[in-house]
Length: 279
Image (cartoon, rainbow, N blue to C red):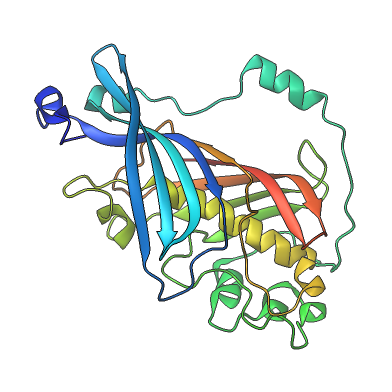
């Protein structure tokens, strides 16, 4: 964007923010130690009042293996515009569609007597050798299966506590989960956006939703149907994200709400869900 001359318009008085887009995995995730290469193309632009919006496509590779496509809308916004962001709310049509959803039911493969989980419970799941029994109960002892399947380790863990788990909740009846993350203004994630622009990257909000899906997979016991597994995105499934509000450097509590839309067992156990993050 700078190469195309955006600085003549922004004049150092605007901040870079992503508005959202679509991500689609075309192959398995990279492994630790792999080097990723990204090719970025500006495909179009549009003018909205005094703001230029760019639309970009990013192709990600490991060597010559193409594994990810990201299409994103981005722009540079004034402080007044950013302060006026009102977040995302459902439209009338979206609300009407939700009321027509036919509820389903999925019988968990494991039964946990707890419906809320503290930070230490999540730490049990995020150790290098996760301890599911310490978090969920004795019947979750993995008995040699998937000894390393758990949540990401600290400090990338973007959940501090799971407030509630309702396996029959949500519009689809397949699960409603609510979790929280208390942000520390001195932690690393506020300083990895742009130099001097202390802001939580939207990707880390999405990461919290992903981790809550992983948590629910373990909670339901879907991991018992696999061996030596690792969490993977569903290949060739477009995933849409929207960002309508910045989270600046402060002690802020984020709330992540996850509604499960589909649970399947073939070809491998999977979950699809809608996630929302609010401050």
